[in-house]
Length: 140
Length: 313
Image (cartoon, rainbow over all chains, first blue to last red; front, side, top):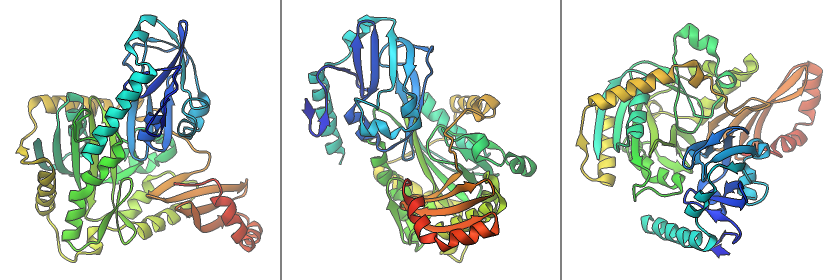
């Protein structure tokens, strides 16, 4: 599925912080969406939390920097970090280049799988992205 | 929107008030300048890699780590700060944060132009005049807000700045100073009379008033003062200052948007200082064994392409 020029794979969940979440039982892989990486611009630095750390949904679980902007990465679901992608820490532009592939960020063990219900499916996220694009156009 | 036209403040207040406002979720504009010099790291800068701590200790120059992006800056009373804090859900704030720089920097560009400086925006976040940087700017999500910070340079001490940064050897430091002097400019280069803080501040405030409507003058209240003090205490802790940051194998220092000075090690005995502009090598100077230097100089054209190959800034 696409919204404007942005890829939105149908087999993933999404949140309003522009994370994609691939759920497999009580585990999930997390990364930034195509729309999210495009908004962020060239990613110059990524600081990911280490394996073994636990987070609640909405907690800060990393930090990101693009040209003169710094922002937080916010956990889309509660859980334990099983693994992080060291390769994107070394080369953050992989998130720009391959958001749904080599640009993945975390593998999580979910502590509350019911939270998945709070995420958006691809169609819903696509509508949300369209709304955001319209708002941006209104700001000018 | 609230306006805090604070004039001279202590070095740490010149950073902590806007952080405090952002953490408290309060929108507003601060205009001020620090009464004494200090060094300010970006959130992801690595202290040990970036800073010549011995020099800072001897000169009594304090170090602060801000929560916004960008690199190390030397700040003193020759710079007027403008700091805008907006809630993240402010409808005027684009999701593409860098798009807001154009609007945020417009009042400062107008001030420069008023004084005859042909200032213009260089995307994403520099102000340049005839290709030379004349303002340092940064932004970051802080608490539930976004903070945009910038400054107008009345003057700049290139010598102190080049001493504050950690460099691999003395010749690199001299090239750093020269690169900054060649690629930066300040109001003193364009105006041969004294410009007061009040004049700059009032013009900046006029510019932001045009964007945001009438601003409400305020003085820091107890909540803001208390939060600022709390942030100051954190900011001077070793844990915060020595937080690990981005590291490079070879030393790289960003001079201005698109301009980088970097070291390239050749072997154990020699290395090169390389000035890169818009991804292309502009100058190379080799330091080390004379014979290696001479040999490399003969092949400089080839090496320039090699050095440029994997680099963009």
